[in-house]
Length: 392
Image 1 (spheres, one colour):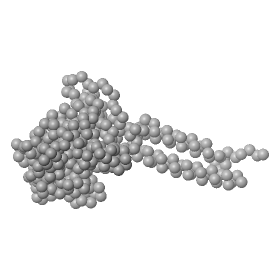
Image 2 (cartoon, rainbow, N blue to C red):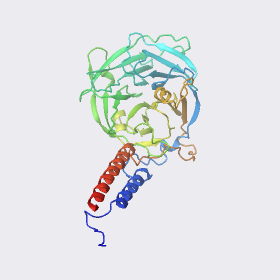
Image 3 (cartoon, rainbow, N blue to C red):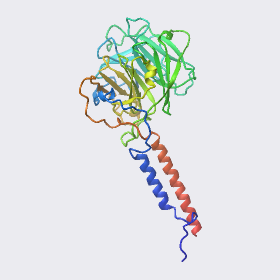
Image 4 (cartoon, one colour):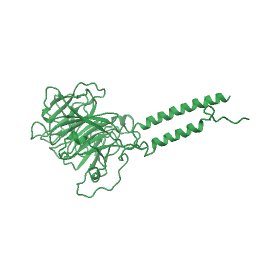
């Protein structure tokens, strides 16, 4: 019998195809696969090095708060966190304490809730008051010609379960120079009062938009200035976090009360930007971040520094997780707290938890890789069938 041909038309494809598939899967799941510059910096003994591993401080007692997408610490009352819910909810702010205890839902008279996405606290027109800034800035279809930020004075009385309204809201109408864009991160500079919005982009290239404090006047639309773009680094893909939402999407943010550290939240990470002396808030965001500690959450969107900036808190939305059966219906989301040690204190020595390590494999590697495996498999089957037909 004549020997089998080893030409391109006659070579048996099975082993080659199988080897290619194995190699592809190995590349996708290897921790060092697809190595890329994450944009995160090595800050030495900087902010991220001073964050202790997170703890569960409690659960949100109001189980109806299942879409918390914005969080801000009161600058008037100790141990009070203001929270707001995502689109479809009433125009109201919820108040909880640091363990999640219910301090009531407080209507914001005159406000409209189209797509509330983030909450900030900062100075405003009256230097003797602290203001809450409610970001109605969500725009999934990128078709809103303008968005609104409501500026509300913090009440002098501590919030209680009675749910007293928050009067005095002013509507600030904002437009973007590049046209409509989706955004979920709202920041207010505690030093200057400038307002900053960071867009939400699947590509990871988010635009930083800024409006100076003296332009924040109700009435005519306020056109923000595009300061620049940032590259959002994603955490390393692991089997534990492979099912989480994309880490390239910015879903919230906050600024320390001293104004020296800015946090941006993504679905998979907390990014910290240290602000140099003389820098504006937007300029600080154009620098390289470090990965601060976080806990894997089903849909992490809310982050807030404590009033004294000695800790920060993250809370996840849980509505989708409940629908998927991965979160209990009768209990609120966990309140995760992370303590920040003083610069002159001993540094934490505990290793980072799952999902806290710096990014290497982009989130889209899994679906893209699986699709490639399917396509290669089908190609292999077709080639094999053709080869057998020729042999006959």
